[in-house]
Length: 441
Image 1 (cartoon, rainbow, N blue to C red):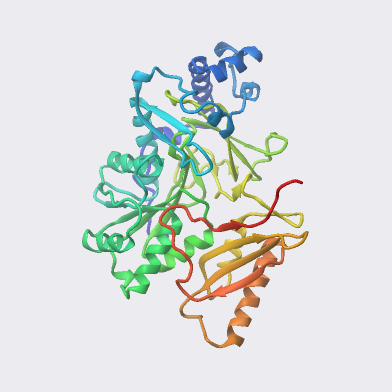
Image 2 (image 1 turned 90 degrees about the horizontal axis):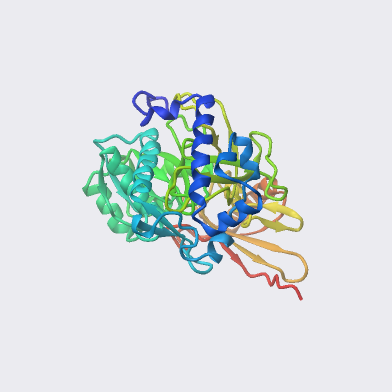
């Protein structure tokens, strides 16, 4: 992507702050956050037990003395047990999807919303967005933070917005064509569904006006990025966030695509071993633990995200000095342990996309017919490679199986399916169907 220039792609000069100055800012903001959290019974009790006061926070090393916060803590204090600001100062509520129970509710003051939109503007500009562009947002609008976070970030940049929301793929394509959309915002799996529909309808993707895409909301691989960019004429950037902390805007890629830049002036990020909760060496995978140091309404201390990724430093070619993260490899609570081997769904996706003829559309089924776990991988074959010759399909199936075994270290059953036979997702892709009976007798 050598045609991109780094010039004018830094939204806020603080993104180039030297690490020595950044640490001083983080300590001051951490101290103020602990002071604000004294309004939250959960933290007030734990700080009292540990004899922690705001003025005892003198360096980032003091972070180790502070308590972790988990999603279970948020659910136990539903809906507003973590509210640190007077309710009359709250101007917005968002929350998680609540697919496994009640949603985790997070609140925002007016200042929180200003910060949030500014953080989203940072990674949008870093990824190529400019004021003269038109952006089509195909995220859901509602409690989910993705739609509104990106919406206000785009507005902050000054670009035009088409708030298409998720779903109705035919209308999405019509709007892309008729409105000359420059940038697409959605999940990567929905981008695949749009690309698939464009191809199916015989539309020449090279004639589309699309130039950029900003993907988030789910784990995806570099191979999937290549598959999307080979189908749509876009430069796809990755961004990361979670509703409990603020939403999208925690980190995002620049045009150099050397990792996602953390917004370290607003978040302190740790990368810890999920079992020992000790720091992992730089560049090694660990669980991201995030402290929000400027959030007013619901500031969380050392929030355990369960997301596994690598964190590393060093100045990027773009000039930003903040730490970066690699792709989310998976979640510590989504990791599959198959016959003693740790497997993340993203590894299976990576293996599939290494085989010519395998598409990015797949699903996993877990069963335990006797005492051993069995994974069946169902994957669509691309229209170009699909054949009614059994011998051709057998060879392709064997190549897919070998690739999966090589990447994961586990043999899995493979079923190959005709093109467009699996469900397409408008939001986060649901790829795992766990049919195992894991109840303890």
